[in-house]
Image (cartoon, rainbow, N blue to C red; front, side):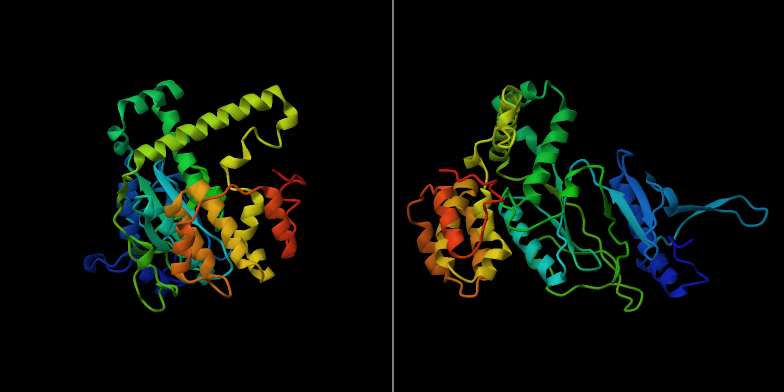
Length: 388
């Protein structure tokens, strides 16, 4: 069976996965007990993938094919762990997973570092994993118990909004939180896999094999990540690691919930507007000032860097827009990352000085004219409209 390493066909891989239980060096054992602990509510689903043919087994309840029943001769059947190669598991109900899919490890490392700074600044405690190929997986496990610290008035708002349904609230909130993180808090400063917003999606399980090696733990902060791939496989005999799960209880939970409530209200308002006037459906009923505009996103994109002109005016526009949407702390993280990728970056003292200046509201008309001067046409992205 190609999904499971074979003793006869590939002893080296089989021996590497099963390892030595008595020396605490068994991928099969460590992975099994890790999944066993995750499956505390019997909700975990898994599937195995053949690394060569790309074929999948059925998506079944844990442990599935990870546990094998063996019958020897006329004796009683016994159970044992299999040398499963590539195991994918479902996303937990309190879990956010962030992954980019850029062509090189270096680009994915840069993306993980940016979003890592943002979510750590907001008080989350992520776990960083090397995927085994070119990407990095960031896992965040939200601690629902931190909601007990909320002001009773806010708790009452949530009860009314979700009609006392905790399940519905948790489902909508974690989906909202995943969207916020995966879109870099609506800036799209880096591109991440939006499929991971859905709780039904599968993700490569910890200690499972990818193209170059096995998924392994890197650390609890973006500073722990390796700028070169940390490869663990049967060739170099380096065993992959697991990170102990840390639940995230962000200190700014009140502000986070208030932002969630406001977004829900805006969403409901937009739905009412849509029903009343279908002609406004392109706008989605949402005031454009509440999100980062498409013409501003163009300055954050690689197209602007290729233009090679106007970085100071681009910085001026980004400073005003990002501060309005994200606030100074998060805006500074995105600005610093963008500035570092410019051919002639500004000095940190200069950026700090600009943050002290007055914040202006800039029209799309002004931004469009600037982008046209540097050779970027965003009229299609903004649907031909120039917002005053």
